[in-house]
Image (tube, rainbow, N blue to C red; front, side, top):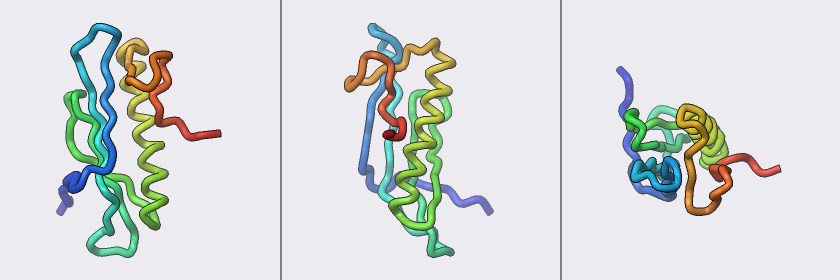
Length: 106
């Protein structure tokens, strides 16, 4: 049986738009890390809404910090794909040059 995940308590949110004048918005929501019910490992639920594939997904890790690190990488990869599919027009308030703000720091 496949477990269904919910976002639970939202700990972070970022809103994107497609292009300068677009009313089309994408929202990234990240839930509070939680322990898997049958394991000592943790997961972080997240959702990228506005794409037509709005289901809640999760990223797992050995502890809460690792799954937070991994969810940022996973969201970055999904946003990069969405951005490519939309001709690089995805933007957020914090960077109009095209950085989506989920890239790992150097």
